Image 1: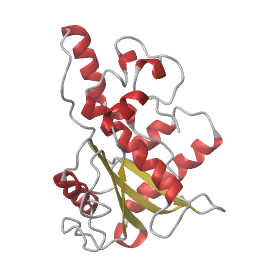
Image 2: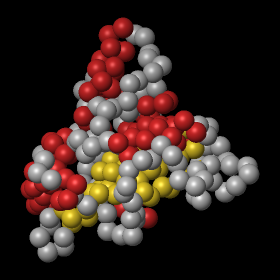
Image 3: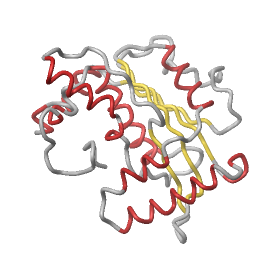
Length: 233
């Protein structure tokens, strides 16, 4: 799974060579959350299946992030905030092994925070419940940079899926939702901050919901150790 913004291995020109370690803390936490969502979907499964696949991540479509690197370079002022990328955090799919046709979609919403924040949990569940699948063509664009048979098969399958989304999605699309919540503050009164016995009321959809909570001590230190110049240059 490539974390490079364009899926390529060649270095980026200045000032984009500051990607991603030149971003504010909250931005790299968001990047890590999206990566973790994809990894957990593929390794832990969801909705009773363990064959989910994430064909691509959409870091390179975060245009505002690269505009901000340009602004920082020209002004000499380091930004402390960064607007998040709109759209889907992560999409995982199940394919028919014989035809490669997409048979199920897993809509993944991720949150990564240094301390527990119940509003982030509520926001994630609300977004998973109400959001459509809006980044199919962005995934196709990301796959276009790869010259492989697998990328071509994914592109064809995603185009078919997009057509089905606009025909009769409530009938033709098998969709489940997943919320991935990563935090650095261990719960005290129970094993998790997310109550496993009582549904989050902000999730109003009538679909299968899968939620994973991960406690990671020193979240920001660990995330910065991944998104640092020594790793990316």
